[in-house]
Amino acid sequence: MIRPVLRRATAAPLAALALALGGVTACGAGGGSDTNCSLDGCTVTFPRSGAAEASILGVTARLVGVDAGTARIEVAGQTVAVPVGGETAADGFTVRVERVTDTEVVVRISR
Image (cartoon, rainbow, N blue to C red):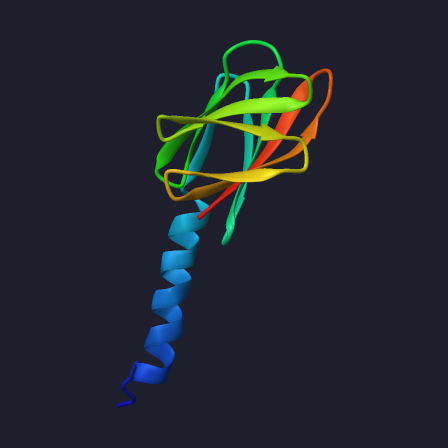
């Protein structure tokens, strides 16, 4: 009888993969936003008009507004103002505004 043995060397990478996949699926769009998550964070595309939010990395993010190339983003209840191409911290997350157009705002949020 051949018995499969799960070795410690095999178990650790499998556990890491399970945790990583759990993190990748920890995002969801709502109110017209679109999310794309990876191991190091999530990119959220918000429509520029209307109320939109996304559930990512265990918190809610939403676009509050845009004024003169600066987006106001609320992450985990904290509102920050970030210029296009800039980044700032909000409640332990890094918030970067990648692009603002007439129709959308693209934001990268990572831990």
